[in-house]
Length: 458
Image (cartoon, rainbow, N blue to C red; front, top):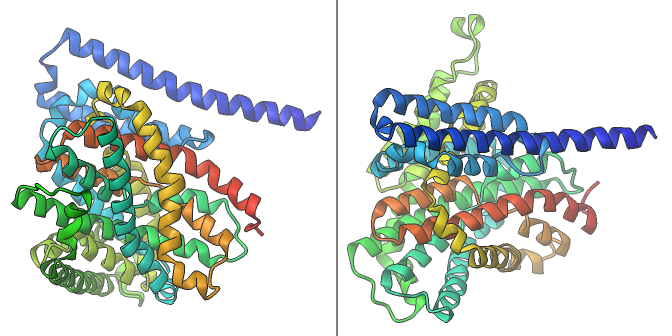
């Protein structure tokens, strides 16, 4: 009887959390739209714009407090929040150049944080499987998803011009990235028999973000430089096979690692492990951990376009410094409560709702194919040499296939693509949004059930 009462209380709490968030977003949307109707010129007022930007942080606070009691991650609720206040953010969304610059800086900080969270020793030990998943996996995922979307669109007669094809190729590459920030909450509640699988999942997802951003940028620059009139979908990926591409890629990797190590050197210099007089009287100042990813991103872009890799490398090397770890609690809160809410709310505000609704069937179909066919295919092919050697069991491959949520970096890349001006903005945002939403809604609750079912849990 007591158990039944406890279950009932838990169900009531869960229902209340869902009801509160949905009701809150409906109220915000209603009054926001009414305000624009009564005062149509108010979005152009600078004071109002500052107020709305601050309100995004308030939305993030409310959702971050309420969403843990639901089965839906906070990222999804934040996207819904962006959809609900679209009219209030119209002034902001119109300035795509400013939005792009802001989300690139935010992405650099997120990737730096991803590097900090990866144990450097485990990363070195499993480097080759991680590299294979993140490098070859991105290529396999991009090409496979492009083929499926292209032939599906072609069958339905939706290929109107080359811009549509270019949009599908770039969308597929942007969505190849996975999201360690979405994976971490799921992994915290799973106790695996072989814990190194967690380290591989986190490390691979962070490095996949780098590969996805690099390949997306390469193709974007290639398509922007010359008109694409290829006959086959595979021809659109040919720029990745040119020697000049690999020379540029080698330059990016080298310059990114060097700049990243320089960033780590600065951190090591200022966060000395020995106790100084300053450290003994004050808390460690985390402001350097905000400056370093921005600085390395800027310097890396100047020295070969490796800004994201430089920011990630700086964080990865800094895992060795104990003083940095003392500051990371604040840094983690800064990411979850400021940076990520802004990115997902802005993405939600940019999506054309009417077109997204029209693409519901296609979006759900492609999202399911992406999760349950392409993702497992990517893991099997990328890790095939280690599967043959017996390093991974079939159950573990299955686990790694379904712990690959698409999230914040893909969202950033979608915004960058929209700013480029060479893609179909409505297609990129609508279809991309469906796939991001589905991976974030389905995979987090599915993964713990899968782990128990296949016997990986202790």
